[in-house]
Image (tube, rainbow, N blue to C red):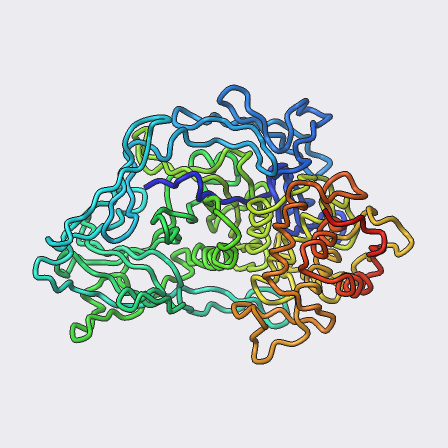
Length: 600
C-alpha cells in the first residue's frame, strides 16, 4: 500500500511546522503556532510553508530557509523555535533511493518526491474491478492496470493496511456474495457546556473508516462505514456492508483502521499512526504501526451476529482501546471532505498516542520536513510514504485527541499550505497580545477555519492540566479581552491573531442559520450577530485567488498578511467593500477600501 505523491497532505508546528494555541509559562495563554517550533507548555510556533518563507535566515541556519532547500538528495529545513530559549537549527532528511529532493517553487515548499508514479511492489485498487500494480523502478515506475475476472466472481480487494497487498479475489463462486452488515462506533469526550474541559465518554458513529474482515490471517472482505454499496450512496453514519469471499467461521473478526482513501484512485489519503515518543521528527521517520482496532470480543463476527439479517451488533471502540485516534480522524476527514473541491490534496499521516506530548505540543509540518512514513515491515519497500504530518499528544492533562478546535486548527494550516500562500513567519506570540502580521494571519486563518469546521467560535484546549478558551466572535478569552488594533496605526501593525481570526469568522458567518442550516453551507453552522455571510465558497475563493497565491497582492507588510487576504476578498468578487468595512469596524482595524490599489 502506497500513496501517490499527488495525494499528499500537510500539517504544521515547526519552522516548517504550525502549532496550536498553547499555554505560556510567563503570561496567560500563548498563541497558536503557524509554522515554527512550538506547542503545549511553551510559546506558539510558525513554519515556512511557502511564499516568503524562502527568505534566508540570519542565525544558525545560515542560508537554509524555513521552506526547505535541497543539498543533493538531502532535504534541509530551518526549524525556528518561537520560544526564545530555543535556538533555531537545521533539520535534515535523506530522501532515499526512490525519491528525489525538489527545491521550493512558487507557493510550494521543498519536498521529497517519488521518482516515478509509485514504488516498486506497491498495489492498490482503482475500483472494484481494476487492480493497480506498480511496475518498473525509479523514474520509470508506473501504475499498471489489470482487470479482475468478473465472470469468475472476482473483485479487487484492498489488502490489510501495512501488511498484505491488494489483489483480485473471488467474492462468490455462486454469484450470490455473502454480505455482512454492522455498525462501527467509538467513545469520545465532548467539550463540557461551560468550556471547562472534557465531559464523560459517549459513543457515536465512526464515519468513513476502513473495515476489514478476516478469517484468521486471511483477508475476506472490506467496507467503508457510512457508504451503502447497494445504492452507491453515502449515509454519513457508522453502518457498513461488506461482501465476503469466504464463509463466516468462529475465527472471523473485524478490524477497523483510522484511514481515509481517495475515492477516485483508491489510494490512502490520510491515516493515524502510533507516535513512538515526543520527538516529532523521529516519529516521522520511524513509526511502524497504524492505529487499528480488533482482536476483542466486540470484533468477533459470529458471536455478535444475527444470522437472519446477517447483521452484527455495533462494534464499539472504547477510550481504553485508543478511540482518541478515531476522534482525531473524524475531524480531519471532515475537513478533507469540505476542501476536496479546491484541488489535489496532499496525503497526511497523523502521529498520536495517549502517553506522550510531542515536543511541539500539537503541530503540523509541510513537505519541507521530508514527509512522514509508516515502516510496516523489514524490507526496503515495506514503507508507506506520506507528504506531510501532524503530531498530537494524549496523556492526562493534555488530551489533544478530544480538543476538536486544536485538531481542526492544525488541519487549517494544511488547507493554507495545500491551496494558498503561507507567510512562513515564526516568532513569539500570545493569546492576548499582538504579533507580527504574517504570523498573525497564518494563525488567524488556521483558527477561523478550525472553528468553522467545528461550528462554534469558541476555541477550547487543555495543556498541563489547565483548560483555557478563546471566543473569537467576542474578542475575549479566559483572562479577559483580546488586544485590538490601533485605529490610528498603520495597516501593517502587529495584530492579535485571534482578533484577526474573529474578523475572518465574521466575514464568513451568517447572522442567522434557521434550524442549524446556513445558506450554501449545509454541513456547518456559522452564526454571528455581525456576520456578513459570504460563506465557505467565497472564503475559499478568497484563499485560492491567484493574485493572492502568486504574491501579486502584497501591500504594506513584506509577507502575505490579513491586508492581502481582505484585498483578495474584494478583488475576487467574494466580498464587497461594505462587508470588509463592517468587519473591520468591529475591531477598529484601520483597513480603508479607498486606499486599496486597483485589482490586478
